Image (tube, rainbow, N blue to C red; front, side, top):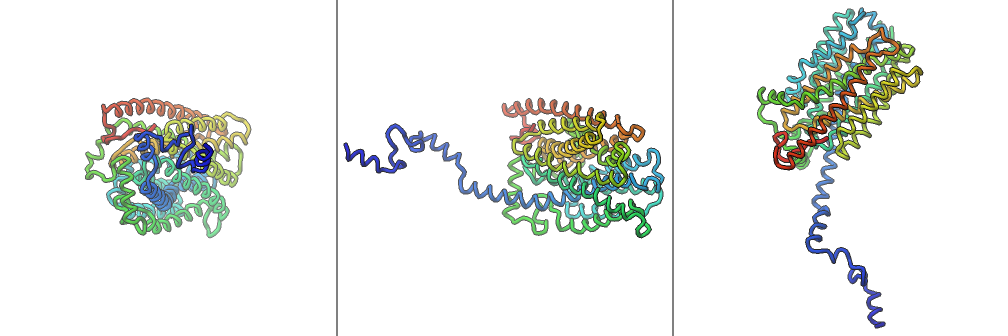
Length: 498
């Protein structure tokens, strides 16, 4: 007895478990042991996960950085012209009455008209050639704006600028969507937005400094703003040729980017996620057949509602600060920057949560509620500080929703030409929202700007309604797909994200 007890005590628990405490691993049923082994990642899976993480980082550093910089040029344009609007520019160019709003309207109209063919050109010509060319054209036109003397010359250059910039937003969002799985896209669109808003905010501070050069070299301060931005854009055009990357299947054409193994992994990731790496042969009927999908118009309408707010704030914030809150011209330019720096926080947080938990609709609804609160503070509060805080909430919410909406539509379509068509459609309606937004801030309504406030609030009440309707539709469609009754988006295994 004693000997047996001693022997039991010295036996390692792992080889001979104590009585009444059976070892959980050795006493599993065979099928349970097999399931446990299947659940544990293998060395090959761990190695592939590490390679995938390295690949994502490479794509982030190359694609998201240059895409953010190029997209920010469009925002810098709105930043320059809005900063210039509180200087002598309107008087110098006789931009009286509605002419300033028309200069914004005509830029957007020209951009809308060329967005679909320009986005298709990104795929047909290739990003490495297309984007440097349009960036150079944008810079040259902006540079020329520094030397105009009439409002008619401004209108002509704004038309040309709209044509040059027409493919930047849709082309780059389309390119980004081809590189990332659906569960990764909102964070990448957030990176894009983060770069843009930081550059826009910094541009406001730079414009404040450039306005101090008023009279230097015989040029007014607003002319220095356009001159410097034009030179920066022309310089970036050369760098873009070496920095931008091609589509995944053509990644080997990009300069010093992916190894053959990494390119194969990049292609397989997207193919496993939605099976649309390779585009079908291009024909206009192949592209335009996607116009029959009502989802495209619903997504586009949501961007229209969003950009009502975006334009009214980005183009008119200095005017609101000056005429609505009583700040000086230089203070108005400078105070336009902090709301955009703040926007970095909500756009990154909401996008990380959205991708981590595969949430799209709830994030859009939350951002919309924040925007409604922000505009309520801006429109109905009497204290200037409270009204200024309202601009922070509103700016952070619409910037966050741009990333959320971009991921929302990109996660719920499949096929290369459908991506190109939808990117052009949503950007066109985004531009149409910009046209409407350029007219809702009425100078005669200072300091409350009731039309802008009520339209912005109403647009996001409608946005919440769209998300609710989409969620019901996507839930029902996924249920039918799981039951084997339908193939969604013409792709086996595809399910909607909501």
